Image (cartoon, rainbow, N blue to C red; front, side, top):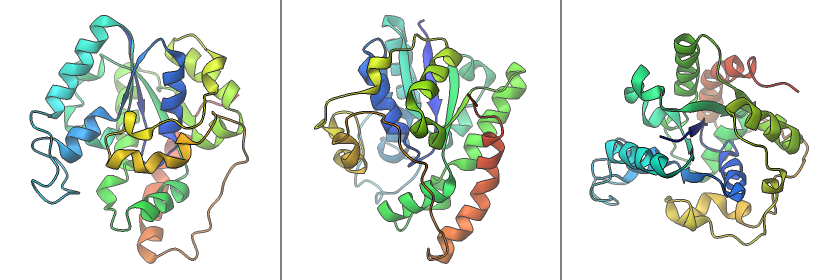
Length: 246
């Protein structure tokens, strides 16, 4: 089986922009949140964001997703971008040993406010920070060394060097040309959720370009957003301490 690189992120963490960059490489089979599709809209969803039975995909399960990933890896290297909270019940040492793991983190003030803008009814169980930290700690315990962590703010400030560092950490060649792409891509071609509606801005972008770090003032956000942020930030801070620093 060829290498399976797994980028474990959280929703609204610029992870799809990173995934688009990986697609430009042309040397890996790139998958967009395949476990998430089964979690939300498989034949027996693990999380009912839709009303039961409203949107389901016959025969799509977490197990069938894993079988598909393994089949793809027999043909060539695979890149998977997904969220740990979709499969925390599957984290056996044997399962985890199939992947080359890396993590993408982002300030929860940015991710949670962005999620609230898209899903005002978002549930804390969809945010993903506790499971991301738990998987990071588990892999560290199993392997004796922490897996590589990229912070979104660092990535967007210096995409060339941070992507180069990521590639070195996971053992793949760095292809600088992959940092740019033509605008006008169709998000629905690679995203199963709502025709790619979360990624309209990304479709009009031209690549990972250096940009100033963003900050969000939470003072005027709803109480629930601030409460969730307070609970999530310690998990983010834990991984932030172990991020790749150039």
